[in-house]
Amino acid sequence: MKKFFTIIGGMGTMATESFIHQLNKRIPASCDQDYLDYILLNHATIPDRTAYLLDNSKPSPYPDLAEDIRQQAKLNPEFFAIPCNTAHYFYDDLQKLTKIPILHMPREAVKEIGNRYPKAKRVGLLATHGTIADHVYENEIKKAGYEFVGPTDAIQAKTDELIYTDIKEHDFVDRQLFHGLVKTMINERKCDVVILGCTELSLAQEREPVDGMPIVDGQIVLVERTLEKAMKLQKEK
Image 1 (cartoon, helix red, strand yellow):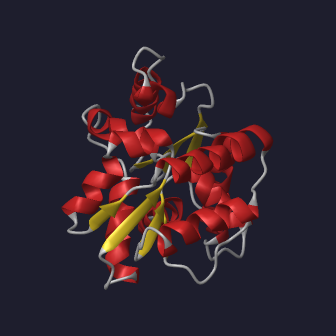
Image 2 (spheres, rainbow, N blue to C red):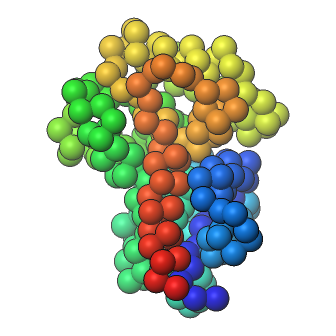
């Protein structure tokens, strides 16, 4: 197979499935051959990213991620996509392992704010505790000239409940909880736009969408960037 890309997934598996579904349904296909050529690596046993970021004595996900990049780089994909926001804490170290470009999901999500909400100033973030703690999104938001608005402790506790208890543990999206979190960030935290910075929250948006609210979904932005690059590869074939 030539002119393909690799997806480093499994963090978590249902969120990766959502990423693939969103990617495939955007392809203007009328036959099997119209779909994209890619390798999906569903590395479900990678240690939990948030657990490590909050306590470095826990197993680090980096060795497994590094091994995945090294192994897949030998197959010479055109680029990598990693549909896990928290894993981007290791982005710079992973990119140093290969000359093959790795799409940066948080960076692309922040860029998308200017396209969709050009008047936005205060940018809120809903994500895992690990993504909040690693400051990757916060740094990208501030670098782009926006004011970063993080969750309160109460909002974070409810976000973790939705991500870990409802979605990861029970594969269930609590519509009221999810919608309430977004509305609280907008109405009480006075955010002009809210980034969904966890792929489980992207899954929640797929199943129980919050309509009419200023949201940038990090996973959907990664889907769109992946599709743009992949369609160019298709044309080159």
